Structure formats: structure tokens, C-alpha cells
Image (tube, rainbow, N blue to C red):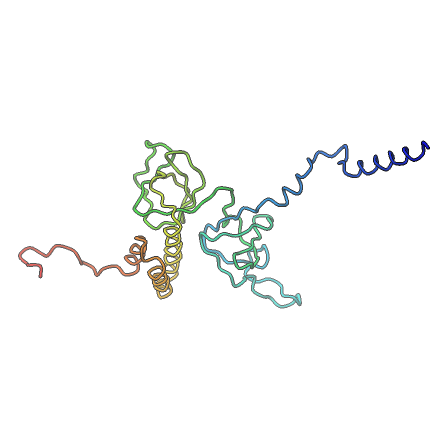
Length: 246
């Protein structure tokens, strides 16, 4: 009569032991599952760059046959302000997945990672500070309306922002516009300015048309329009002495 209770006890003990972690394991129950389920924080593109097939600065790489040379570039040029998913890091290069699910390599200098980074812009020209202190105002540097800024740190009443083509700067937080529509226009302005620098003004004009069609209520559209279609030289100047303005 004693064998049955003993067998039941042994089976119960074995069943319980299967659910227990190894005595030497440091991981807490559920920690691995929680880590796997944690969302991946997207990274930001800092400057215009083209995805590469391999983490290599060479424009050409060996083709599949090992004899011919083929382009190392993918047909995917990413603009400042785009968000990507970081997949892998390797000796100064980052493998990313773009919004269209294309995967490729960029230099790590083209990527801004970090939780809490957000996009902002300026509706009017803003003063720059070298440090988060009013006494550290930089009289020689200003940020222009429509600049696409990436806010990396807040230290009220200041925010540290990543600036297109320049070092980070501190600005008064109250100067930043963070509304979705204002930031969307700033992204279009950023691309249009890049196209102008590349002497592709016709394409920049198409960006302006898109901004006018989709965001006509956002004042920053007028900033882009003024940049692409400046008034004729001398327009708005007072007439010479002795002449009447018609």
C-alpha cells in the first residue's frame, strides 16, 4: 500500500522540477521573452546617403561570377529625417532596413540612434547657444526657418538639436515647432534644398508643388516658395530720389 503514494510523490516531484530554472542561471523568469518582445527603436538618417550592398567604401565590388565588377549601390537613396531599423553593426558600417523593407549598409556617421529622439523645425529664425545657458549665446550663428532638426536632449528651457550640415546646437525649446504637419513640411524643405544644391531645380519645384497641394495651411510652405522663386532684384526697394512710385 506504500508504493502507490511514493510513486505519486516521485511523479509530482519530477513534474515540478521541469518547470524550475537551472539553479545556476541568473536570468529571471520571463526576462528573455520580454527582451524579445521589446520594440526596436528606429534610428534617424542624418544626411543623404545611398544604401550599399556590402559594408565597403568601394563603388564597385566583385560580381556573382567572381570575375566581373558590379555596382555596390542599391537603388535606394535615403534622405535626412527618414527613419530606419538598425539590423547589424560592422566596423564603421550599419546595416539598416528602410521603410520599403530594402536592406543595405550605410556609414555609421549617417545614423542617429537613441531612444527619445524626435523631429522638430522652426517657424522663425532662432538664436543658437553653445551651451544651455543664456550667457552662451552665439551671435555668429542662427538657425533658419524650415530647418529639419532632431531633438536629442532637453535641459529646460533649452533643447539640444542635431542641425543639418553642422554641429549640434542648443536652442530655446519654446522656439521649436513639433507639430506633425510643420515637421512634414520641414522634411520637404530639406529635400528641396538638397535638390537645389545638386542643380536639380526642376525636381525641387515638384517638391514645392507637393507642399502647396498637401500643406497649404502651413506657413513654412511660403518659406520654400520664397527660396525657390525669389522676387526680382530690386523689387520692394524705394524708388530713386525725384521719382514717383506708380
